Length: 276
Image 1 (tube, rainbow, N blue to C red):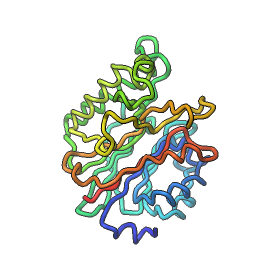
Image 2 (cartoon, rainbow, N blue to C red):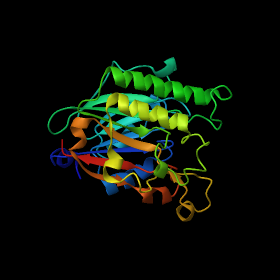
Image 3 (tube, rainbow, N blue to C red):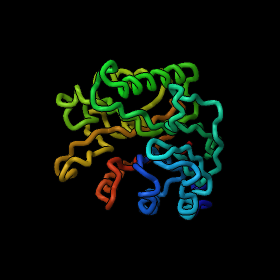
């Protein structure tokens, strides 16, 4: 759908995807656009300095408005939009690291601007102990800062998306008991993410559509010989909306087929559609 037609349909489709290298997987973006036709696409782990971001290829897909914040080799976030967007200039430098894990923007939308935040939370390494693993400590500190930030400014007409690297609910992982001591589903991480969600009054947009007692995954490890057959997934990718937008949620997609693409990311795109 052309950008003009998308902008005029009266709803807003926001997709999020940990692309795991935007330059390597640029050809897959056309498949994503053909399948989901998002108005806004938030990417994480772009692994690309700003000066090398593939603007021309993205422009050809109809994303005439773009914000990028990247670095060489790892991390990196981007917001690609068919609607006008403005960068938020007042958001924090998380943990003082300048490591390209967040972009905040204002999106032109039906009914008025929407505040959009795109996050890539630290994975946290392999050992769930901040004393033995500095990466895990960084993850917890990042979420604690985000919690304090949300507490000071409760969400209004806002959407938050991204790879949060935490699967909070029992059925967000393939085995709750076996993953309790595995980074991404440990009790300390789950509590931290819950505190962040409560602090901002955020509404879990995916669980708005899929009850908490049903399995829901967005990530499958590269280590699985047959990821679809084993189905040992986790829900690491999230969409949260402010309470005033919860009633505007009309549809969601967890695009599982993307995990089977050639040169796939280990995450799949997730999209929500709002009538705001």
